[in-house]
Image 1 (cartoon, rainbow, N blue to C red):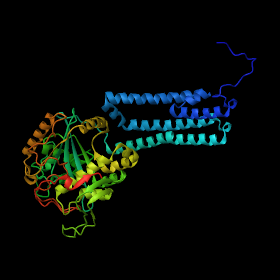
Image 2 (image 1 turned 135 degrees about the vertical axis):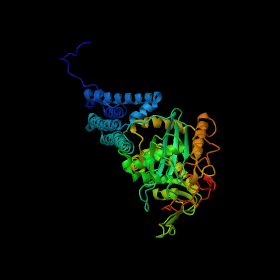
Image 3 (image 1 turned 180 degrees about the horizontal axis):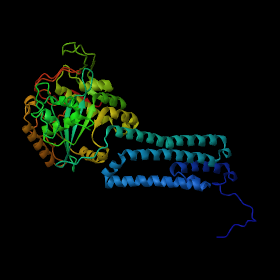
Image 4 (image 1 turned 90 degrees about the vertical axis):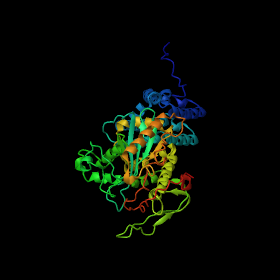
Length: 510
């Protein structure tokens, strides 16, 4: 290639680098072309317009970002749980947030530099204003979007760090993970937290097939394994009469924190131990959902929609010295309803003038309504509010290091039918529970679940399991009376009537 003759005068013929020598129409096309290049291939506009050093950096960052995206997609296909395990680590989320913020700043710089390269002074006034406006909009969409993404990542990191522990992970026992779900209500007129809703979720560690066992909150004489510190106080089980129901063990253990040195939540640990003895399954983890936080979460997603079939009272306090409630403070009437957190909470917890089975159906209806409404667009729109509510809604000892495995299992579980069984009358009488029979129900239900293929009938529906289909919320409260009166309504009447049809009480969604 011959060198240019230094004696020949330089001619500025390249309109990309020297727009001053071009016609107005060429300058305008050039301006729009540079803007589009910066939007879709950051750095390319700088290269073609002469700012090659900045442009190369832009392309490197852009290509590097897409390489990471492609790798993430490949990992999600080949080893999805590994990807989930990575992105649920606090330090990874912090690094991701920093990267997003850096990208936002860098893209802003590239757009600003593109505006300089356009040289607006060479454009006609109308085009000059249009290009500046379009660049401003793209700056908001790109840099602003990345900054918003970083903010959500930081919010998610904060929620993960607040909710999930940092301890070691537990192995599956006999091929299963068993997680105790508790619904706690530390409301007024109560001392401490009392888990009124108890259920044990047993998940096959390979297939993800799950079975939910509903545990009556008024189960009496609940045993403790010999390895439990509570066994020293109650070697024959929690057998101090009608007041010693299984849901009172949480508070009882909190009175004896010295028995659980170094344990963050002795009440939850004691509940795990007694449920292990009740069911014969080793309980690795627990999750405690607080109803007050539940109200905050409902508000965070903008409320829920249901079709209500019954008039539900918002209960008042009791008359001093009695267990009789004052007239209701209000009512939730039948019809197509959009419930905020306050009314959704009362709808799920109210028991006055209704049976415990009615309340169980309403609780399931609220849960299904939330699952329906928590779609990806809704979660993204309200992500920061949801993340902010999470620490007030749930506490658990599931470690962050095992979140990837559980997310992967959850994806499998969603595709399968979930088996359900509750230890309720007439098979099990909570006041005189036969724990050997409960163990037999558990074994048969799990065996039936494991024998089903994905297209088979509902797994785990055992003929000996009592009323199947319960979510475990207050299961069996219709057994022996004896639970104390509380703020959401009168206690169970002691009847053993069957659970009503869900469609006769509530339908989730509009």
